[in-house]
Length: 284
Ligand code: OGA
Ligand code: MN
Image 1 (cartoon, rainbow, N blue to C red):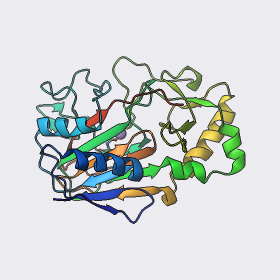
Image 2: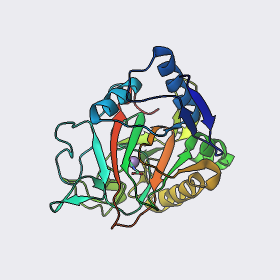
Image 3: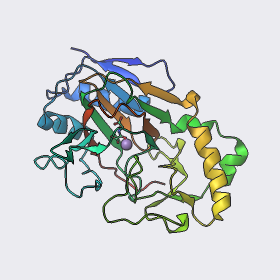
């Protein structure tokens, strides 16, 4: 079956049909999938049925896998498959089977608190609540390009610290202390403006708002710029929404989109298996 791509009616994202991700892909199809991912930034493949090894094999088409960052419990959720993260609110025998609970996950990109952040995020849905828990994505190329010239000038060459101590649900990671002064936030310091080394195109590289600080600025000045950047970046003009069904497989470009998740009823069940692909270079 041939691969078909239908761009969403949104500034980013495309539905890809004609790919069974559980089977080895023809090299030409694989090449097309990778180029669609680079072009549309978020790919949506529906109706998949994947075992964990099949999810891993599919994920490796995008590159070497990057194990998940430390979760609040200090050990992998799937001991047999440590490269898979579990995103879930389900608690079994008094223990969460996955990360992020049922609350909102605020806008973020994954693991940007390390020097070489993952270049792709891959999320596969197994169980989905009847409502809520939608995932949003925002295109940071479009956001950068739409910035006023004075803001572009204000952030050019500036670096920002990306908080390593909390996850996107606001939970403190194991081994970290709460932050009282953002000038002491632990985590990588990346340029606020990233240039895609393949294309030369610039995007905003924000990571996450909580505990961020623009290195070298007074905290109040840094907060003022960051608040303005985040208000700009999360505008509907740059976003798409994904309403999940079981069997959906999403792949996003983690270095040029942000994502966030809506809260959902904690009494319902949401289970996702998750991989990510290692980046190949520092953000510049
Ligand atoms: C993630 C994440 C959002 C969601 O897996 O990195 O942010 O919709 N998940 O579960
Ligand atoms: Mn995430």
